[in-house]
Image 1 (spheres, rainbow, N blue to C red):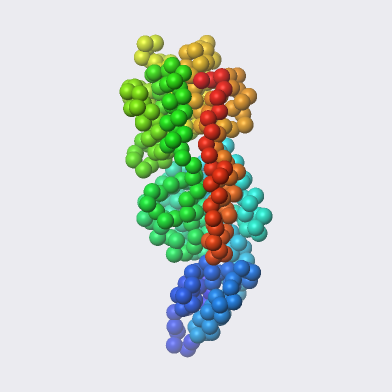
Image 2 (image 1 turned 180 degrees about the vertical axis):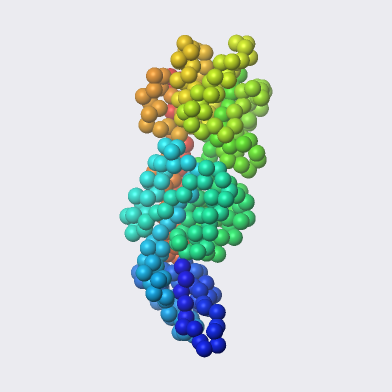
Length: 345
């Protein structure tokens, strides 16, 4: 968002909202809220902004005046794929909470592309959005942290170890360990694995991978290359995984699979049943997310339930508190993952 002062005869460079913020010793988002007539601005900050604007002989441009109310109340939401039911439910939870506080949302999908993530961060820099909730991380954490200069950023269902960015997350490493150990305790010793990530350290889905690996190592079980599948996300991806598993010689097939997605799990289940196989006798299947459809499959899916509403609520509340420069105490009481035991495993 650009605000300009009148141009002296000498042809001085036009000031921006960042100049006003620097002069007042405040954040860009605080000055933006003041210009948007936001009620949650302290009297001290109002006076500092007014003094800075007066010293700069600064008045809003007519174009900025027309646009500023929308921009000042717009929250960005970054997800990898909105078609994934987990993200669609999470966005719904965030938007409902944001609207109840008088904010609108702008959603962008990255499709695991760093450039798309950077585009959203640039929107924060340009004040197209006043704050950002990142439900997906693809780029360098240091770059993400640098954009805090332009407005608050909250991570939702993502972690950057060692970062002081607000982070709302669950313990997916522990949940994945417990789920894998549940399969092992059920008697399954040859366990395949599906991830939406690339298996690189610090990459997408890394916490779940670490939990899976820790369970296998604890019980001294093998992790065979033919049983590991990367960057799988959809039902169709699950069908392709099933085809590959069924193409293996009988003695080399896994007896269970832990997936990081209910969609992938349901695709595997569908293909195995179509091939005349029995679940879980021929293959035990573990999903992740506990989408509503998982209890209605031909063989109800054993999976891990995520607290979607709590993730959305806490992320939104924390972001808005940062935008309005208020304190916020994260409520972690509902940020727990739960193993849902059904017939597929």
